Length: 75
Image 1: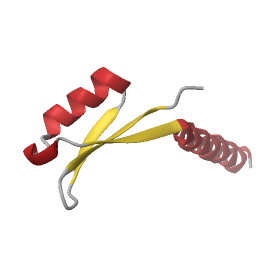
Image 2: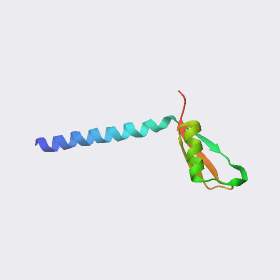
Image 3: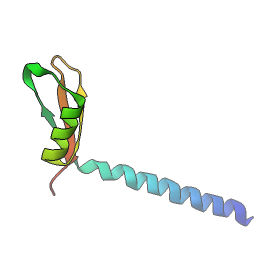
Image 4: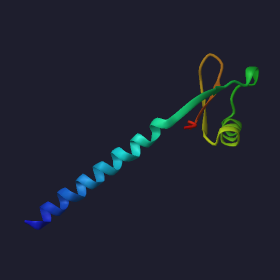
C-alpha cells in the first residue's frame, strides 16, 4: 500500500517541478538582428546575441534571413 502512495507523491513532485521550469521562460524578451544583404550565419548570430544581450540567437529563414535573439528581460 505504501509503494503506490510513494509513486503518486513522486509523480506530483515531478509534475510540479516541470511546471515551475516552464514558467521561468516567461521573462524572455526577443530582438530581431538584421545583417542586411549578408544573410544570417548561425555562429555569428549566436555570438552577437550572447555577447550583446547574454541570450541565445538562432537564424530564421524569412524573406531575408534574420537572427532572432531571446534574452532575459530586465526586471
